[in-house]
Image (tube, rainbow over all chains, first blue to last red; front, side, top):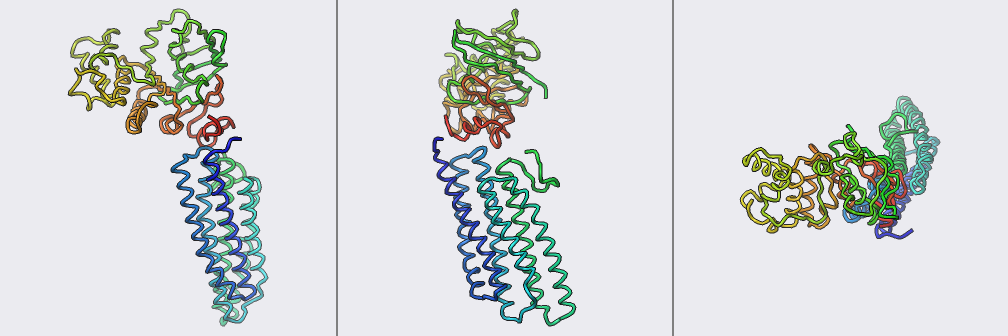
Length: 225
Length: 252
């Protein structure tokens, strides 16, 4: 197949969003490790690296707009650029949530441990796995996998409810743990939001492959374009 | 939306050379339909079958049907002059007559005997020029030569000339390909405006133009209709890989 001028730019765009995806995934994992292992140094690193992620977002925005303005992409090329342009801010927001978890870790690490972090690593692992799978599904344009990942968000939602109730009870029973428990509640909420964002990415993966909008549709398994 | 032109199993030959293969498609009334495809794909030939312009080529042969308002235009007894009045045509290169602006538009009205009086003729000329979005630019120099107009104005004059005889359909063969971007934009705006009252078929090499002005797009290759779909679908998610390859510039 003949190589077009646009192909080089689309490849660049693909590389950039995959790098951003990798950096975002690393941020989530590092933030959770900083929390579970009480590693404040690592938490600070997450916050520092967030600036790099912001920069990556700007570069992708710039390149996406350039391709739209100069190359007038159509059909799959157009869907690719649109998907990248929409997935990029989602990744950046996920990284922001990782930053918020890192900030919570900095506070929690100065206080006595509130509880055993059993649910959190599971939640975080699910979120990280979903994110990685969503990025793989994006790379391979795998809408089937994307639909499966969307279903997995329910696991995170269930964990969130469990953790929420647990922390609430803890606050009632042991008021001295309230500050720590409140911070953990935020952490749980951040993980839950990350799950939602991964779902959004998967919906865009389906758009990229099938030109179908499944967002806001009750039946996400099949949707006409 | 009712069908204005219904084409079924149309084949077209230049002598022994087949140029169109088994084309079937419906063109809805008051819609803009764009024909796209690489040079030599048969899109202009196909356009010309819709008002029998190809009849002028001695070796041309057609089979299949082209029905306009339910009547097969290739049936014996078709009044070709009346057909071409009903189906106006605008060409790639503007071709005004070596006459005044007024006379260019009045010519078709006169020879078809459409007007009832001198005043009626003047009114019809004005209406056609207004409909072609040219009136304001030429109203003070109607009796000057049409050759004094710019390329874009000449092309709109040709559209006015086509409109003057009250056609129902307008065929446009790359009407803006020789024009600068501003004149092109005016033609495109005009096409969109004319859609309210006319059915328009436009052949274009400009993908963005097809995307901007048409509601449906037909993609031709090697004399065959590859895909016919809404323009929205064609440019976002075409059904055929060939269409995708063409509109994304993988071949030209």
